[in-house]
Length: 99
View 1 (tube, rainbow, N blue to C red):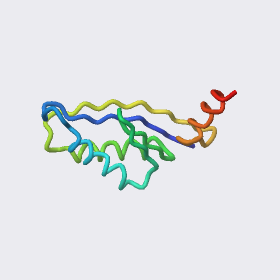
View 2: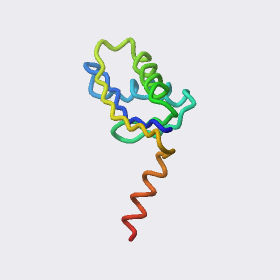
View 3: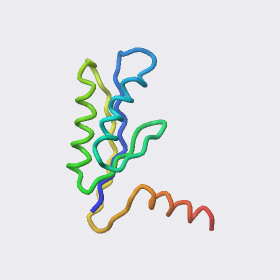
View 4: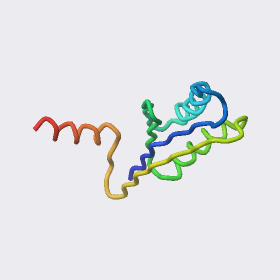
């Protein structure tokens, strides 16, 4: 089984640059023990079960408890029938590009 989520956690009304807040949320994700990858538009988190991944997302959001409003976008993929990881998904597409 494999659960993967793309998440963007963005505080609203905290000024033009929110990198300080994003860094705090990403630090929670980093310290979770789950596989993760930061992208310019959000963070990918991978775990065995959706509850594992969603729990980390919840903890990252709670880290920003000093923000009065937070926008959270989540896209999740859950596969019960086989293991697929972030790297394998990218490799599969790249193999097809190089045909």
